[in-house]
Structure formats: C-alpha cells, structure tokens
Image (cartoon, rainbow, N blue to C red; front, side, top):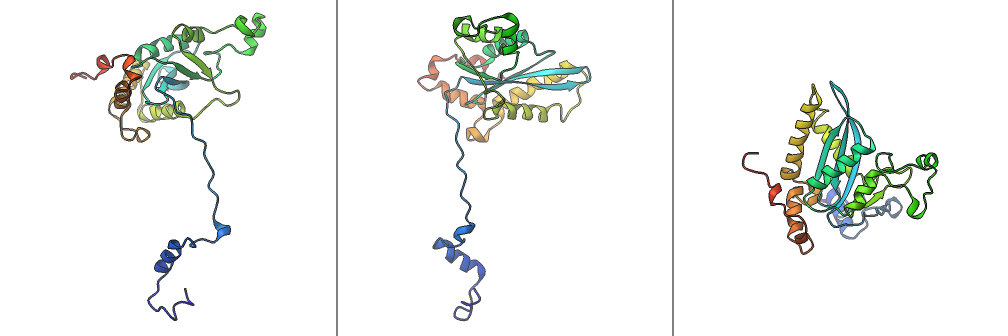
Length: 240
C-alpha cells in the first residue's frame, strides 16, 4: 500500500483489499486453511425415530425422562416414569406408537438393558445368541410385532447425530432448569404443554421455518404419506 500511495494518493486499505479479493489474491497461499469435509447423515423418510432416556428431579425425587423424536419431521413425544426397566421401556414404546401421527418403520436406541439383552445376560441364561436362538427383549419383540426395525448404536458410541440428545437439553432448559416443581404431576403437566407448543407452534430452522406438525402435513400429502394415518384427529382443537 505504501509503495502505491506515491502514484495513487487516494488509495485506502479497504479499496486495495477489495482489489485483491477480485483477483483472488487477498490471502497468502500458505495461510489458507483447507476446509474439513463433513460427512452428511443419510436422509430417511419419516418414520425413523430415535429414543433415549435421561434423568430429571423434582422435590419428590428422581424421574426418568423417555423421549422419542422423528429423525426427519422432528415430531417429538416424551413421558416421565419412576424407573427405567425393560417393562417401562416397552410401555413407553406402546405409547409412542399410539402418539406418532404415522407408522414407524425404524427405531434407534442405545445398547442399554432396557432395550436389548446384554452379553452377560446371555451367559447367565446359557442362551446361544446365534440365529433364531438369540434371546430378544420385550422391547424388540414389540418392535417385531409392529413391523418396526429395531436398530442399536455402535458399542462405546452411544450417540448418532445427536438429535435425541439435543431435544433432551431443549426439554430440560424449558422445564427443570427454569422452574421448580413440588411434585411429579406438575412436571408432567408442564412437559405436556411444552410438547404441544413444540410440535404444533415452534418453527424450526432445520425444517426451514416449519413446525414439526406442518412438516408432517406436507409429508402426508405425498404419494407415500397418503397411506399413513390421517392426522385430522391430532389437530389442535379450539379449546386447547
């Protein structure tokens, strides 16, 4: 710049920088950092649900928050339980099947004892875990009876793309991190209010400004979505 000021008195740093940018020489080659290529997750049709469990607390004690969220439409359902046994996980799956506005064809969980039998369980029961002799949990059996493909995360890698983990943080930020609950019932009522607001009214950036309910409606208008459950009965009524 100082060498050019003698011939171009009105030269400024910004104008010189813009000139360099036009010719693609605004940065030295050895200072340019190569951008890391990020692998995008495979796109799926609606019906692929992620399920996870986390802990929350009220004055009465500890509760377990079961959450299920669709990978594509972001439609979410959550419920509180006093334990996290296999029976409780199966009960939550039954509720999830009823609450989802369309049929689920895939479900993803971790390798917890609530969802699958561990290798130690096979050893204790002396069961051969090869072929048809493999012992299945009640959660997996319910998936099979409803024609749902039950998938598990990789060992020592209990997350995939962090969708269900992110909705867990969102729920906790809107409930237990802001408000104090005297009992479990008040937390469950507030959780239901939050889910209604999230599913039916909250525009999401990842859905390009649509709410999960609006995304579901768009899907049900497609050729494949027309064969799914009609969502009319799930529309928010005038008194809600």
